[in-house]
Length: 150
Image 1: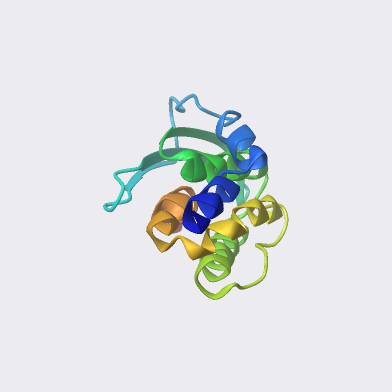
Image 2 (image 1 turned 135 degrees about the vertical axis):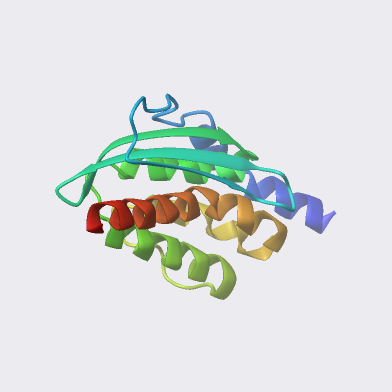
C-alpha cells in the first residue's frame, strides 16, 4: 500500500486547492500569440493566449484540460505570469524541468510557487502535464519574439 499512500500524498490539499483556483480562464480576443500543447501520454491539453507590451506579459488567458497536477501548475503560472518577461518564463520552465527530473532548485520568483509540485518528481508519467503551461508559454514567447523582431 506504500505506492497508494505516496499517490495520496502527491495530491495534497494544496495541489487540489490550486487545481480549483485557476486564474485567467477566459481566452483573449486579440492575443499576440496563442499556443496549444498536448501531453501525448495522458492527453492533457493547455492553450495559452498572451499579449505583451514593452517586453512584459500584459494579458494572459488559458484553457486547461489536465489532471490535478497540470491544473495546479497552470494555476501557479496564471497567478504569477502578468508582468513577467520571456526570459523569466524560460527560466521558470527550465527550472521546473530540472526540479522534476533532477531534483533541482525551486523555480525562481515569481514562479517559486511551483515548489508545491516537487513531490511529483517520482511520477515521471505526470511530468509532461505539469510542464504543459510553461512549455506553451515559452513557445508563445518565441512566436512573439519572431513577430516583433520582423
